[in-house]
Image (cartoon, rainbow, N blue to C red; front, side, top):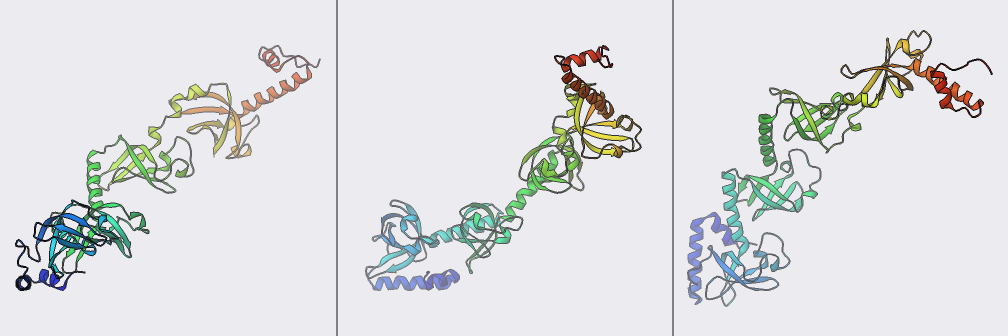
Length: 409
């Protein structure tokens, strides 16, 4: 604890001077005299020459060494002096006075550090500078940081948003700005939120200067909604609509993305006035229509899923992003009034590719012809089982060559 006269001296310079004169007179009456002009209230430099369990001795160039008690070493709670100093360290100390019959100098490293810390904090506040400080405690209402003295970061100034649990910040070194100082109350209030907001503002301005439509940029998935995802492009969020996430149909963005994931997206539209950005993900992915003819051939039969019904037919998904149309006339070998008479959404069916137009992104399909060929193949297989030694392949070859005899043998 600080001596009462120290506090009074700091608050009233005239009183401090009078007390120093009284102290000097007392020293002379005790036969001590001034020790190389060292007076209470001064800050001097000395070398640590001895470390005891509860104090250290410091050589300040006087005729006697000065003592720094454990509680005067640091504003932090210490168990041992060597947590702060070691032999040979050169440190600054504040002269408190003398103690004991021998008149040993009583010194405080803590007071010297705090005086210097107040100077640094005042300069940082005046110049709007960012300082760094480690978090030493988590207390009710915020964080205690070491800025050469006990600084306080209110919970409302720890981050840009609400922070439910402050414990993870313990031990971290934070970048802070000084927002309030009061020496008389020994109060130093700092803010991390102010630093984060300023950094975010700079990033936003930089991004809006650089971003253009058509660019491909990296971003982080910030949040998912039913209609899309918000992507942090670096200080500015862009909207990636669900319709721009995949070449295929998806029910929810979580089928494609997850929060915190880094993705490459294309800038589709910009509204600088409203600060809105529309993004696309599928635009940076391979377009399945570019190579569709490598995977599908006219005349071949494939399996697909009915994804939509229209009055004129049914749309069948062959793969994500590649749908084909089965015209109502190609659904069955009989007249069909509505597609729902034959298929329903979600049905998995076999279809035959009639033609492919990659440029127009259209594929014409036939369920009727696929059913007919499947029925013929089944009939051939049945006949092959009845005709010993006559393989299915041979039956098919004979059928397509026109050499098939439908008459019973």
